Length: 179
Image (cartoon, rainbow, N blue to C red; front, side):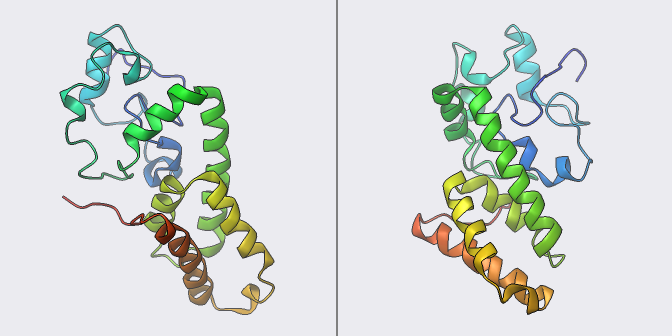
């Protein structure tokens, strides 16, 4: 969108974790402000003084957030509002540090345990689980000495099972919501 630029490509103006998006990871999107899609929230930012994040606006949350978490695009919208709140509480610098660790975890999962069918699952899991839960999962993975002798499909199933069990403890559904 003409005139809309952002410094932070890991976390969007509306609260999406662009750094954990399969489009961003695959270099198919440049991130918020550098992608190829027009965005009503980017337009709104331009109209309201080029806010870096929606929560900086006096009208936040506005009607644009009414049903924002009902459907997903390439990335889950389920934590959008909660992640904006988290940024407000801990600051963008600390949040980006956590996101960078999540990106490393996601990159590791995709490079080593993706059987060609789990990219979205891993992206959603890393988005929705807390960093401590992801660290717990990675510890379990690293401690399994027998993992390397399993087939790729079995390794993938093992990793999915670990992530799903962690998600189940908090009643988190690790699926994208379809329109």
